[in-house]
Amino acid sequence: MSPEQVRGNPADARSDIFALGCVLYEMLTGKPAFRKPTSAETMSAILNEDPPTVSQVTPNLPPGLQRVVNRCLAKSPEQRFQHASDLAFALESLSDSSGSSVTTVNQTVPSKRWTWIATAAVLAIAIAAALILWWRQPPAVPVVQAVTQLTDDGEAKHACDNLLTDGSRIYYNQGTAFSMKIAQVAVTGGPTAIIPTRFALPNITGLTHEGSALLAFVGPFSEPALPVWTIPLPTGEPRRLGSLEAQDGSFAPDGRILFSQGKDVYIADKDGSNPRKLVSADGQIGQPSISPDNKHLSSGWFSYKPSNADRYCVA
Image 1 (spheres, one colour):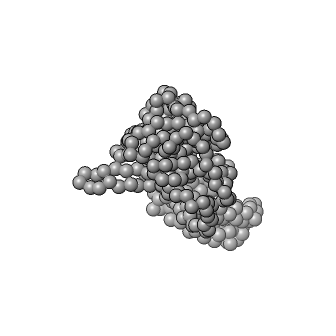
Image 2 (cartoon, one colour):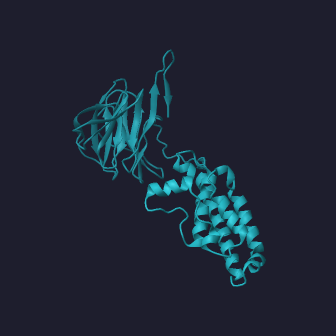
Image 3 (spheres, helix red, strand yellow):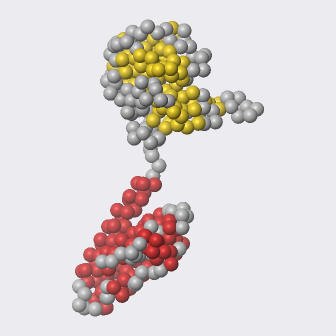
């Protein structure tokens, strides 16, 4: 941990160079640069103390290599190498000249030893630089490479509704706003099939992790909250989840019911009982979902109404 990280200040590539300097110090001396009996004392040493010089611990070290380590371990980021490439260049220069410099210091220390040390350090720098570059690189922007039509039945599909899949089938709503149906098709496309229900307006919003049931909100879209049902797959009698009424929802990875009511998100047990609020927002929340590790929530859309302004929808 660099001094700026101990202070809680922003870290950058120069913080990584400090960490690499600690690695080089231990490679050359066999001892950690700042280790103390407790974490608090170690952090204090990082901020206020310089480690014993490498030459004190390991005699006959080439002066150039010691200067490289000292510069890496400078307390101020401005006094360190500013880029990994600068450090790699310094070490490579030492590698080129290490044989002659070592033999002039002490003939008892084999020159090849320092050559190998410098070469290993250059390799470590190159690996660290590649890792830093990979870690700091922004994720690639997704690019659509191809579009495949899956259905050709002439039925109206609802573009804003959920498309749910278990890996082999895709489930979706089709029909008019006043005559909704639940349909399915293979992920590779082909004939579609209707999942029969006794509902006129079933709007599916979730699919269980194992693909055994759909979550549906039954009723017209104009209603602020709708009854919540589960529909077994491939067939079976739908089941009402207690007295739950919501505007949108999904299944949590463990099978519990995640649902939104206005600006609030709730979670309930698998049978719809014991609902409890998780979070509130400043606007209406739609399509809430939870991550596979049950640690993060996301929303497919969010609407709010600023003062003296129209309503906006944000994905």
